[in-house]
Length: 306
Image 1 (cartoon, one colour):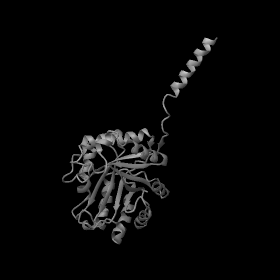
Image 2: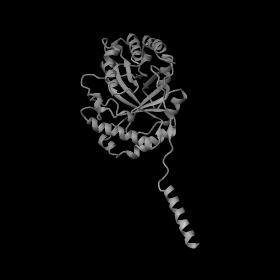
Image 3: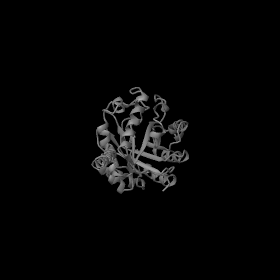
C-alpha cells in the first residue's frame, strides 16, 4: 500500500507540474471598429494628446464630433491612456502613429525593444477599448529615418510584423492595425515592397494633401488606391489629409469628401494644424477660414454616414 500511495502521489505531482509548467498568459482585450464606407471622420490637432480642447474646437467648427482622435507617439513614449479615455467620452476612438524616430528598425525587428513594446501593449490592452495604431507611417517616402532610402523594405516589414506579434502576445487584441503609406508621388518607393501581409494589417491608411489648384482626389489619391487594391482588399482610410488655402480650400474640400465617398474609403482624418511654411506646409486649420469651415460642415453632412 505504501508503494501504491507513493506512486499515486508521484502521478499527482506530475499532473500538477504539467498544469503549472508555464506561467498563465496575459489576459486579452478584444475590440474592433466597424468597417463602414465613408463613415469615419478623424482629426489631428496641435496639443494632442496633452489636451482635448482643440479637438473640441474643431468639432464645434465642423458641426460633428470626430470618430477618430489622433496623435503622434514618439519612440519611448507610453500609451496616453488619459487622452484615450477622454476621446472615448466624446465618442471617438484613439488613433496613434507610433514612430521609431530614435530607434533602430533592425533592432526592433530583432526584439531589442521588446520590454518597451510589451509595456505599451499592456497599457493598450488594459484600456480595453478599440485603438487604431500605425507604426512607421509613410515608410514609402524618403523624409523619415525609417523610410525609403534609409531602411530596406524587408527590414521594415520584419519590424512591423514583430511589433504586431508582441502586441498580440500581450493580449492587446483591441488594436486596429493601420498600415500607413504616403500617396504615390515623385520620389516615393513601390508600396507593395513594404506590405507586411494581410495577417498583420487591419486597415490601409493613405496620407495625401491638396497643395495647389490643379490637385483633385483622382490625382492625389486615385493612383495609390488602385495600387493598394491590386494586392489587398483591406479597407482604406485617408489617414492624414487636408486641403490648403493655396489649393482653393473651400471648393476643394467638396472634392475631397466626394472622392472619399466615390472611392468607397472608410473616411478621412483631417490634419488641422497651422504650419505656414511654404506650399507643402500651409495653414491647414479649418477654424481659420469661415468659408472652409462652412464647406467642411456641408461636405461632412452630405458625404459622411452618421
